[in-house]
Image (tube, rainbow, N blue to C red):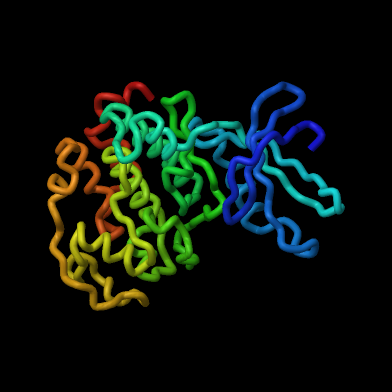
Length: 300
């Protein structure tokens, strides 16, 4: 760590503390993520090693936070620790929205559309490299110069391949978690990230999360109240999930009533992300090529 100086703590998550710092050689501000370990014997957590490996393969994309360095160090007690060094961005999407428009207010359609397109471009890069993010949320999207989104925090990310393997369902912050995961699916793929993009896009446009549950069952009920309760006709095999229950039967609501201030074009595009059956969800390529982005595509 002789080349870097920590200045203040920025936050702490399940997989490490993040500090603001400076590269002593250049004066560049950086973010330093310190890996948490529980004992000397365990060493560096697998999640940290996986995050480093993933970032090395994708951080050249302009819509993914840039990995600058990986540094080992020792505490005063002699314990070995690891720091992941990132470019420093002082604002995440959640804070940007509040500072720009105030709490509970959405961004203007133009910037909302650009942010959504940038997020999709960054996510396409991840998926093209065989990586599911699995924890997309406004707090994990950093904003550069008030105009560019960068995907960050790959601590829960996983490589995927065909045929799909089995994964843990303890992924993605609850409000942005896809229904197949909430229902206990162990085999899933990139549509879980597409669902999260839809939840984020709804929040960018409206200023508030679209589905807010305090538990997995409450989250499912929040989703079904708006999108309707799935059936074997709309989602074949849905009743075979291990966490399926006989849920109340709700019909889909008109999003124009729920979001009266959002234009019809944006709501129609939003609905393509928020389809309960992952097979029917829009794909990353379809989303990027959608006519919704015709007026900004040439900017990228």
